[in-house]
Amino acid sequence: MASEIGRERREAREIGRARREARDIGRGRREEYIVYMGDCPKDDLSTTSSMHTSILQEALGSNRRASESLMYSYKRSFNGFVAKLTEEEKNRITNMDAVVSVFPNGIKELHTTRSWDFVGLPQQVTRRTSVESDLIIGMLDTGIWPESQSFDDQYFSAPPTKWKGTCQSSLNFTCNKYVLY
Image (cartoon, rainbow, N blue to C red; front, side, top):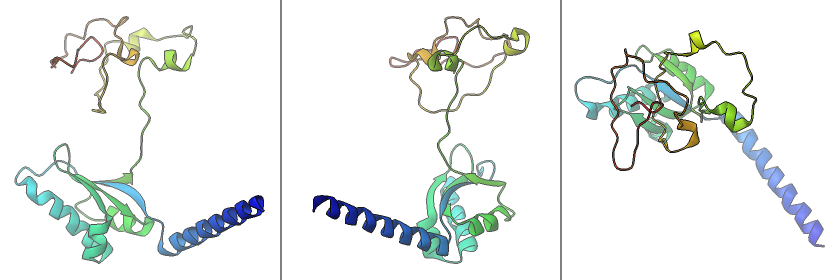
């Protein structure tokens, strides 16, 4: 009896999932996209969100749908926004003059110079130190924990002389040769 009830529940869940998928396909499944529009406007930052909403209104044809679609407006680091869009809506926005690019929003896996250690790969590999040293790559602000082994600077040399940055350490943040800025 209990197994039959469990089977019926599973079947009901499957039917509900199939109906939702069919509805999403009929409507056009909405995915999150980042709409990149270049540098931040130099004038009034308060108009940025309304500009993003206007673009969505033009692409979606509705104020209500534009408001529901807009997930986030970037205002400080660059000009852009995140919106839930169908493939067709994404293509419409991609072709707008004010838009530089549109790409899927998602979680990216970060890589560090210590990845080899974390995944247990051997250290006996051919290295090209002439190419691998004296190179700085910009850091994404993902909220780091400098004390993590991932940011250990034990085998790092001093920053290159061309490095012009500073380290802004504080009571709860310590800089080293790996965490430069």
